[in-house]
Image (tube, rainbow, N blue to C red; front, top):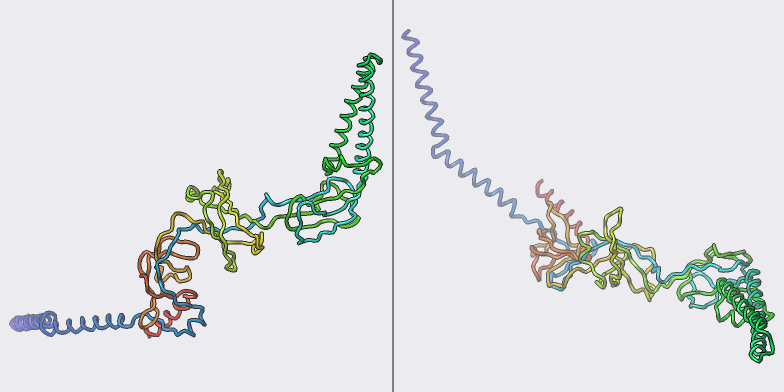
Length: 400
């Protein structure tokens, strides 16, 4: 028992000694010195991480080779714009599809596709038995009318002098009325075949009209021609299409939320895929919504008197919304996303470094900057994704 008691005392004193050593190591001067040293190392590492800013250094030649440019931020008039895609189309108010009003055979068609024509220019000559019959009927009716008018004048005079019976006078008057109706009917038939009232009246006796001159109803450009010499034609087949290309339309689908802000007369900037720009205006706001998309529709008109724009080409339209304001703005090509934040590469003493910015309104290809870029600072624009890629390479090298 005595031996066991001694062993327990020895174990007790060993445990007390171990506890004292642990306390000194954990809370004593050496522990505090170790903690200060560790904290200093962590601070130094953090400073090292931020001591090497994220810069990309490029000279003028490198900027040019990578399609980059440096611009200076400045305040300028900025108008909020609603950007919408669209397609140029012909103005239906200035387009004509021409068919032959008579049955007949094409004898000539001198105008070529692409030619400029004026209203009244000859498009084709068509030989028509139908027109010949109609003109013969009109001339015959006109002769009968002239004869009936002469008989009526004579019978009226005789009746007034009590020489002729009233019955003869009334018969002559009835015949004149019938002859007048026949002439008017024959003239209407000629006019329905495309002959003008003046041309019908100028027809001379014995000159049966057999050839019809098909003429341009409007001035413009001949866009299509679908006939050949000797071909039989009728009123069902369109032979020519003419359009005035000096004005083009763009029909834009617009969100309902923006529809109330669009008015007839508002300015619209239009740009095609090659970068060509022009200014147009809103000429019509559709009062009804599209039943399928539930969106509104706006029609824009542009001037194309120089022929620089083509019907059918796709364009980007920017409808100006509101009054101009003085702000700092940058091209869309200057902005990219870095760590889920819109950023701009700003020029510093050591090179170009990304900086997060707060975006405002957009107008065409320019973006308002609310915060993050000041007037007078220089920034990169163009192929800025090259800078982001170079930045990634630098970070990878730094991590190694």
